[in-house]
Length: 237
Image (cartoon, rainbow, N blue to C red; front, top):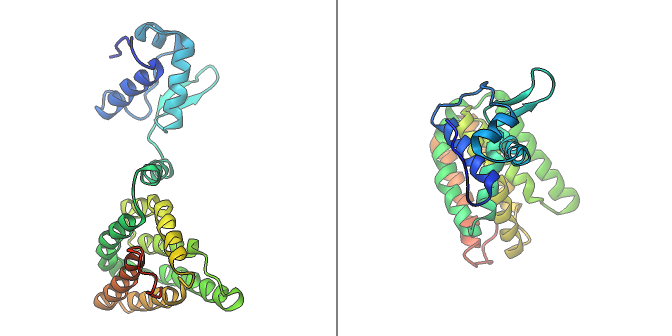
């Protein structure tokens, strides 16, 4: 199952080989990997190198390392949080412009509106309105709008689909979304004044299960951010 490694950064090659075995189904969640000594013999490397590779696999959520008589390295499935962080890091550190992020949001967020209208519960509506209330309170008391509230709102909208895959994608987009919103706020410090009102209009449309109205509000909402990021600061957000 395991092949000797002889080139490059050896521990990385071990990680890649074990990852492929997991993807191919030759190793499944719960399987115990051979001991460090045995893995070292099979890969033709030292136990120190094997230990470094196992730590890398653990950091990626692919193995869990247990200590004790029944310990060892066990194959495991990454948690949704680890997957979200990985995708978010990929998006954040790739060469992606804020305008690209907003364009992707337009495709993604408009596409989920029908599901949100169909599946949103009373709890979903209450949570979304509570975010709107916090935003209104900050605008009234401090005349400021933290864009983190906008990101929180849009991620919470995705959760209202009650589809774990959609929520995971939305969570992974939080970092890049904040990046684009901060850029938009640099272009127009008044960002949030109209946006907060649109958030509430969207929630009320969802509450009525009015798909057309919800899509119309979200379309205008996201288009305004996209326009601002095309270097047109005269648009009010």
